[in-house]
Amino acid sequence: MQIKPISGKENKNGQSRRGYDDDRYRHRTSNYSTVCISGNNNFKKLPFEALKNYPRVESVGLENNQISMIHGKAFAASKKIKLLNLYSNDLHNLPNNVFKYIPASQFLLLGLNQILDINSYTFTGLESLTDLDMPMNNLSKLPSNVFQHLPKLKILDLAMNKISSISTEAFTGLEELDFLNLAGNKLTDIQESTFASLTKLEMLVLDNNALESLTTGMFLGLKNLRELYVSNNRLEGLPRDTFKHVPRLSKMALNSNRLKSMDGEALSRLKELSLAYLHGNPLVCDCKVTSLLKWLSSSQVKAFPGAVLRCWEPAEHRGKELKSLQRSQLKCLKIKLLNLYSNDLHNLPNNVVKYIPRLQFLLLGLNQILDINSYTFTGLESLTDLDMPMNNVSKLPSNVFQHLPKLKILDLAMNKISSISTEAFTGLEELDFLNLAGNKLTDIQESTFASLTKLEMLVLDNNALESLTTGMFLGLKNLRELYVSNNRLEGLPRDTFKHVPRLSKMALNSNRLKSMDGEALSRLKELSLAYLHGNPLVCDCKVTSLLK
Image 1: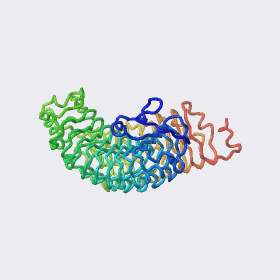
Image 2 (image 1 turned 90 degrees about the horizontal axis):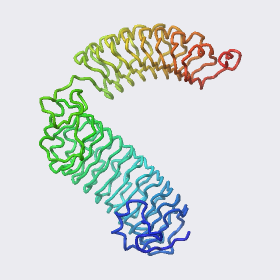
Image 3 (image 1 turned 135 degrees about the horizontal axis):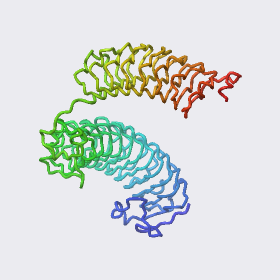
Image 4 (image 1 turned 90 degrees about the vertical axis):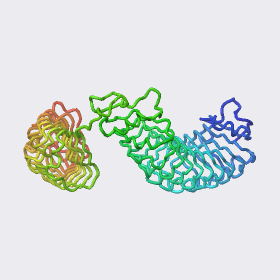
């Protein structure tokens, strides 16, 4: 491995030492003695004391090579290094304590590698480090105390990794940090006090994650935060106390989320706010945004050039600039969506929803609901979507859905349903999707689905069905898709699909089918996709028609 020292800030081709963002370092590193072996040198390893011939070197550029391995003592003879650039190599792991031999290092550039994880020993000894750049790697989590040996760190760039989990102790020790970039990761939530030790942080970048909410506790400790960027996430609301712990915010980006409402009080409390990007959200312009309108009307805060906060709903205001509306125009909508997903409901009182007759979407999944009856959904004549997966419903009694004439989607997956009345689906004349997957059905009686004349998709996967009968499909003349994988089916009689002639997609895989009558399938003239694999087929004369 031949390394040639190069003075100044350029290599022999006049190219920048760094693979990216070089200007940030030029004025601070221009006087460093430099070793540079960047680009197309095919270096794959940094061996023991790799730079021993240059004990006084201060800037090492190893970017754009193919380095995949670093010896634990690669830098043991190079204690003067202040900048180490390993950008754009093929590193998957960093040996513990590998950097402890370069205690004077101020800049460590590790971006565009394949680094999978870091721990509390990765950065041991780097007590002078001010800038750690690790964008575009494969980190999935930040464990406790991972940066504890970096007391002078000011800039930490972890953008475009795969981070989905951050320990509440991950940033312990970073008392001087003023810039943190976590953009482009896979964060769905951030726990309370995660940033509590970052008392000097001024800029926090969380763009392009999957955050669903901003909580008050998430910003604990960030009393000096000046800039917050959370665009392109999945935020749905902005509660009044959201920014309680970040009173000095001057710039904020919440654009391109799913914000249907924002509490203007949350923004009006930010006395130093001068720029706020709020556009690109599906704002519902009803009485809930009155405080937001008040803030917009009185605030001098600048928005993104050319972008305005527009209404998405109701239809009469769609596309209008919120600021152009009068408060008297902001009327509360009749409830059309009620989301009670992931609570602890065990029972629903009879007639409880009759007071919201315009409701179209009712989401009750991931509760503990034990039973429903013919009075549960009284009055919901406009309902089109009823989602009740992951509850404890064990049976569907007669006429349970009789008050839902416009229902199109019914999701009852992953309950404990073992019994369905033949009158259970009476009244569902518009239903086109029914999901009963993941229940405890062993059989379904003749004519159970007879009233579902418009049903197009029926999902019965992951039950314990032992057979499919001709009568089971009575009335399903428009059924297009049938999924019955992972059951206990043992045979497929010739007339099975007599009443579902329009089937185009079917899944019967992973059952106990030892034989299948090919005639049953050949009658399905519109069938374009069939999953039949994963069955213990007995290849004797009984499967001749199937082979044909």
